[in-house]
Length: 132
Image (cartoon, rainbow, N blue to C red; front, side, top):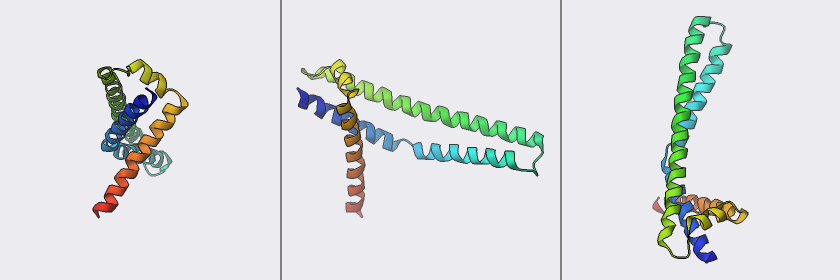
């Protein structure tokens, strides 16, 4: 039964790695970084008037809030997909979502998730090298 748990969780983490790779996290992080840098430059500027600084900072803070909500929504999407995939384990006799969730929170489950994510990105990198 231990091999069934490890195999199923490996597949779950691999699917979550594919999903996380397809979502535009880097674009959102870049946008958040640029808005933060723009805010700091606006605050330090001696040329810009305080009224304009206030409007600019308000617009930047709204942009940061919006981008943060989008990132939070993506994280929730990944978590929900992972939970749904764990619930599908009901179809397999020796597995249950409770057993899988208990295994995930152990050190072995954590190491399995890291190995699964690294193997996905390694396979992706090998595929790109072979394709070129």
